[in-house]
Image (cartoon, rainbow, N blue to C red; front, side, top):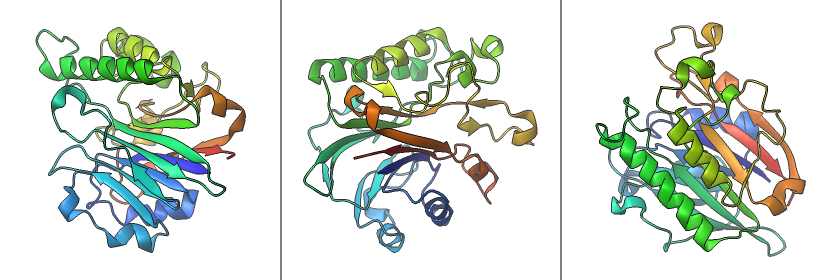
Length: 266
């Protein structure tokens, strides 16, 4: 099974790019973040035309939003928490039914970006981000241990030194500050393995996001790894490979994030 995660940064604006993604990666399950579309306006015909017969979505007007497109049946977990009680459509939990009767638990997250100032006392957005990750960590710890579980999404934190273009220069920049990194590591350690770093040593640079502010993103290569795929420890032996689709950053009208694919032998 190939699972792909991508912050599409507006589904309706970049709907045509899904064909490029499917042609390049042929995912079995595609998890999208920042869809920015309420459920009533979701383009229902598009997933089926791309071979995805099953769709789950949780969206709102203009902001946030997550969706799962699958070639296998989905059952949404309606009991999953509403983090912070905000109803802001940042998480979708579902079970994927596989041939042979097996079930894979899937969590698709869009973590708050956190604003610009890394100080919770003056920046409510940063406080919300830290509280969101704390709440998620506590919930996964309380409801674990997990088996046959995958967590993906734009987690908006680059935890490792080589997940950013300059560890020294970005230590005080939201997405790589110590409070965020400590929290993301604690969340992952609640019962997951970093599937991409399973293949790529931590001393190698690895990015999934390049700012729109960089006129030539490829030449400057000032990226961050904000998009993640985690698996429960029992799936570590089943990991078959990964791909970060860097060329997607050069598509016509691209997202500032690129798709991340992980193969799991199930």
